[in-house]
Length: 123
Figure (spheres, rainbow, N blue to C red):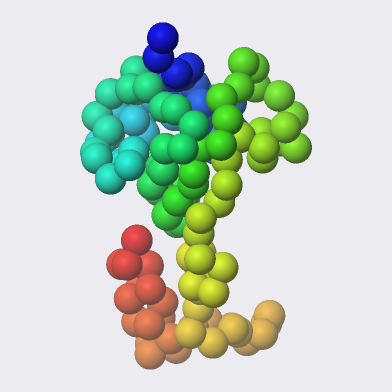
């Protein structure tokens, strides 16, 4: 008998990475998700405990290890038990700026705007 498995889009929704299951399905169908290093192009691919998933979420690249399968979409505390976050905490993985601007400093200078544009192009 094979070990238990769950559809990838369902697991992403159960683990609360996406607000709706259709958003999780869109990500799976976009071929921007990797399961154990192989590109996933279908939402019906099975996920099992021990699999490593890499996918973009907003401006972040998430790397998670599947620890358990769920039977329902429960509260956030329950969803956190389904995976282990493998992101490196030392590397900033979100929106950053070169230098924080105090509130009320006006518009950014040309130099600051270009550096912000370079940061946004990385995504």
